Amino acid sequence: AASPGPSLAPLAFEPVPPNRDDAVRVPDGYRQRVLIRWGDPVLPGAPEFDHERQTAAAQRQQFGYNNDYLTVVPLPDPERADDHGRRGLLVVNHEYTNEELIFRRYDDKAPTAAQIGVAMAAHGMSVVELERVGDTGEWRLVRSGALPYNRRITVETPLEFTGPAAGSALLRTAADPDGRRVLGTLSNCSGGVTPWGTVLSGEENFDHYFVGGDEAPAAAKPALDRYGFHTKRRHPPGSRHWDTADERFDLAQHPNEANRFGWIVELDPYDSESVPRKRTALGRFKHEGATIVVAGDGRVVAYLGDDERFEYLYKFVSEERLQTGDSADDRRHNRGLLDRGTLYAAEFGFTSAGEIDGAGALPDDGAFNGSGRWLPLAQGELSMIDGMALDEVLVHTRLAADRAGATPLDRPEDVAIHPRDHRVYVSLSNNDYRGAVGRPAADEANPRHDNKHGHVLELIETGGDPAADTFAWSLPIVCGDPDDPATYFAGFDKTSVSPISCPDNLTFDADGNLWISTDGNAVTGPGGDPYNDGLFAVPVDGPERGRVRQFLSVPIGAEQASAYLTPDQRTALVSVQHPGEVGGATADRPASTWPDGDLARPAVVVVWRAGDGLLGR
Ligand code: FEO
Ligand code: CA
Ligand code: CA
Ligand code: CA
Image 1 (cartoon, rainbow, N blue to C red):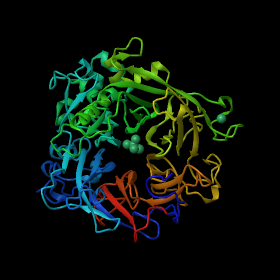
Image 2 (image 1 turned 120 degrees about the vertical axis):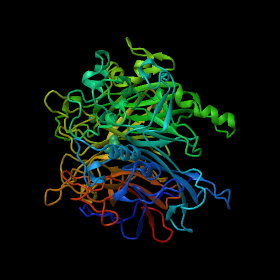
Image 3 (image 1 turned 180 degrees about the vertical axis):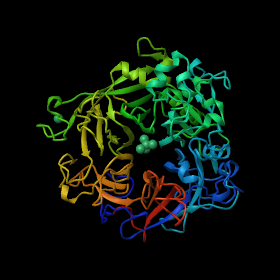
Image 4 (image 1 turned 60 degrees about the vertical axis):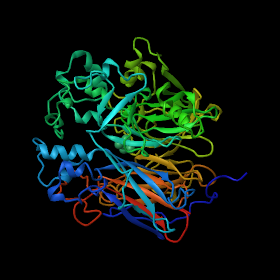
């Protein structure tokens, strides 16, 4: 049978060697260009970036800081209505700001109101119209015309809560006594796309923005502690002081404001007037992203990581089924799918539990593997946790999963679904506390103590059904320098794989090769300095399963935050986050001057193949 997309051909590119260059490096035969960088105009009429005179008003109309997740949704070509391969909307989130790299004079004990305003406006999301350049694999911004889709979402943009916890007493504040409307989205990390054309984005490290937890009511404290809110001094080192600009970030005055972040946000990029939604049925934790797959019976499944050491993997299964038509009724129906269903946390079982010593040696049966089950936390309108009401389960989901007995993992980050058979891949980024005194020891799913390099989990739902409540799992890749015996590349010859460390965002190409973006490379070079992060491709089937090859590297201090591969496989868009984020570096003492040779600026880069070749082939 013919399979959609390009034919299955082995990856064939010369890997980019590990390096510490202050540049984006791609294999021979590939081209690259910066598509958009922090401060570039997004809204029609937005001012050009002027670093010395940056204002919140300008920033609200310009591309935000620290682009993280990105995707492209198609737009029809006005001249060729059936051609969705020439125009699109780039949807990006902006996770956080590096004030020390943004401002020439920045005192983290006393930032100015103007600085706080710029930082707030640099968070959130952007929607930007793109077009293909001729018939090449290059894409560029559309800079003229009405730009009806272009949009910025910031900390001031109204969003609404939907699903079972909307209106809960836990979400009500002085500014929002109904608990249904919240300003802004924060700490957006990874994301996903839905079959109905919306984009999902996960609110991750939202605790950093709040102070005053030590003066919050006693009843709020267990959950504040469990989510890592600062509770000791009012302004800890590195605090953004946002409470001085907007008192809702002071938990002593507004303890419930904390509960209004940590959700999956759903954005309709095709309607710039639409109100984005925080979907409470998907629970609240340090959401990495949401990866959607449709089960055989039409139910919609979202896989969800909680990115912190010893946190859990979750999934949501909708109650209703996807309607595949395109009527207004179908669209309305589908837009409610993420509001009602069952939320689960994963419990892992082991085949070699007694043999795991924390040093990374494979157990006697030759595999880190086992079975597992999905533990229901909430089902429709019902809490599945004794002693917790439904809204408590959804707002304090970590506490619910603790009680259910979920398995603590080494930082569950992004999830990708194999395009043909729905195998599930999860990045477990790293966990330097694994095996530390008073912390959980290594187990078969998290097999190394002081896990600096992370690993990749492969999970196969029973019967291949994404809605199943049990699964089998294994670890195909245990990351690190292949010279390190405590690494594993699905049994592939280690002398011909690239070093890889700290897997984060994941995506598949149409052939079923997994593309891995890394965050925090801990493999060091000759001088003891870590190599730069990058983008790696690896087959997960056939004789080259486990052959990791580096496709791209990003500048010094940058995270290769995410990649989007176009369906025609001619283009990759990559998100270069926080270039120059190195301890002690500042705007005036930069560690990176990428991309323009002066101020380091987070940016999205477009990578394409010279000629009309396919990426990676
Ligand atoms: Fe923002 Fe989980 O990386
Ligand atoms: Ca991430
Ligand atoms: Ca085993
Ligand atoms: Ca990360």
